Length: 273
Ligand code: B12
View 1 (spheres, rainbow, N blue to C red):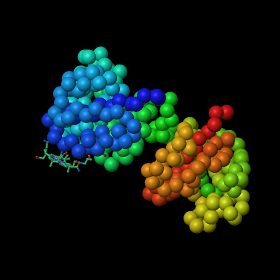
View 2 (view 1 turned 30 degrees about the horizontal axis):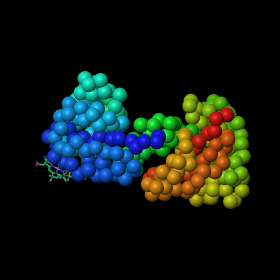
View 3 (view 1 turned 90 degrees about the vertical axis):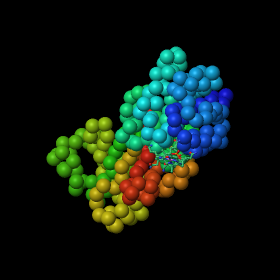
View 4 (view 1 turned 180 degrees about the vertical axis):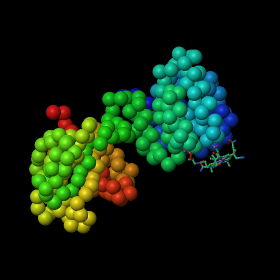
């Protein structure tokens, strides 16, 4: 996108808390956007009008007063009345998580609560305005597989294949990880049995330390490189800062278990077959 993204930050209703709105306005300017701030105590109609007059790409509503369930939908209605419902609206402030599904049903694209890094908000807006931009804030698409560390794949095959009756998709050796892998299909995802090929394999070390069992959960993502860079910028502890080759023509990288309460997550991006 060649021109600057234009954002209207607005404070609907009688809410006098303006710090968050000002913080967001400044952060978005720092990300190269043009930001117009309405100031306090605007009516939904005034906000819609300002958005049209300023020809903005996005409206960001800020509310800390507890009136978001009434005011945010009113802004959506005011935009419709003025034939401007194509302007996307996001929201933020002190908003209980249980209210978020309702606000999204009413047409708010996304709600950001205290503690969300401003980097994430800026990335989201960029992608909202230009969907062709890589979106590292989009959630992972699905669980690609669950990795289970075993000493010997042959010894456990009968449980997965014969008892559970899962469909065996195949075997593969992944030299970069020092493992032999067996894949079983289960719905949209799969179970991946991991057998160490040598003593240097992380799976060998894992079994030595913790015994056999669930080793990791792999999440299917797009743009793995951009995503890793984004997580690094957010100080998320990573095992791999750049992706490496995984099974099935994929690129993979592991987050450090410190990032997720002791759970080892793998990111994995499958190339189009
Ligand atoms: C500072 C503060 C005040 C200051 C406000 C100063 C100012 N100019 O803003 C003063 C002392 C004036 C004040 C007054 C009141 N306050 Co006060 N206040 C707070 C407090 C402690 C911090 C708010 C703050 O500035 N946070 C820092 C900023 C940077 O964070 P933020 O606003 O949450 O913004 C972040 C995100 O929410 C998000 N975000 C915010 N807006 C937007 C918009 C978009 C588009 C996006 C993408 C993201 C986004 O990004 C920001 C950065 O991370 C909160 C408690 C709390 N912990 O939140 C109570 C709080 C908001 N206040 C509260 C109350 C009740 C009041 C009063 C009614 C108290 C009274 N009885 O007089 C009055 C009302 C004043 C008024 N006219 O509206 C309640 C609100 C309860 C509710 N929502 O149901 C809170 C939650 C305290 C509480 N736990 O009860 N308050």
